[in-house]
Length: 405
Image (cartoon, rainbow, N blue to C red):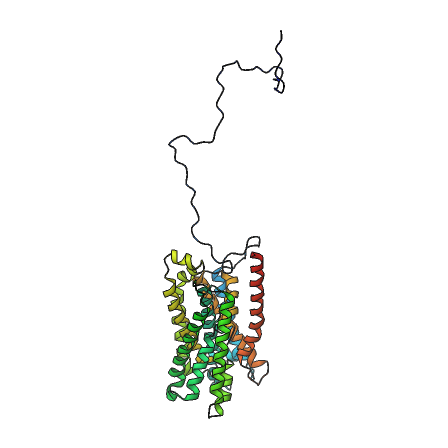
């Protein structure tokens, strides 16, 4: 009698030999490690990612291509030299660039009809414009790292308004009249800038210690308006009518008061402040990873912020004392510099300084030539360009928040 296979069983293919019953079958291959073997440990990423606004582009976007650092520095130096020559040659009185070059190198005929215009009027103005533009750009770059907000700026955060209010008080009250242009006004501007920044910092800080864009902007705008009203009140109650025109032009921001005897202080403060901030480039980079990340990596964020805030107030106060409140330079220039060399502050700060210098020298040249012989305050032109840029930044941040949600 033949044995039929059970229903549902699989028949072997013809010619295939079946193993004998009871024959040991080979054990199936397993991926379990042998007992006692050491498995490789997967290392976790513990370093926090940097803020996307300052570091790499969002996922899905093409990477930003940047030029070599040396190429950028060389190009900016050439641009600054060209902007300086143009500023010395053009104005209400046009001077051939060849004559400007001969005057600067001492090869011009003596006496030259243009020597006084170039050396005593325009050259101090160009140097002051370069110093103020570089200083405001460096301070703006630093503030954006300290508060981790791309909208931070000495003008928007009330620092310039505080310096202006203090300087106007000194001018109107006549405090230290003999030293007003060299000591009293810069000292008062520093104190006013520091107190204004401290007030904005206190008002914008949340209970958890962080910042939001809305709180920071509201605090800065509120403090700026209060200080502007205080400045207007001081001018209205002033007994001298000549203060009104002088201080009004100064508060709008201008470089017309540049003189050789007042250039030393802003240049020295700019050089020292930029050097100190370059030495602090690594802590500034650590702040970009966040408050907790910087603390984990060994940075005392509270003490560091306090010291850098004081330094930023000092630089801003000294510059505002010479040029008045020139807004939006510290807001626009850092973003342009990051597009060129990235967010690492050791390379970002020098590029921002040179970019700010070129920008303000060219802006002052436009202010002198657009309505010549009328001299427009350069702060008016920077506000006309900075206002739309500020609105674009707000729109971009809103779009990113909507994408993240």
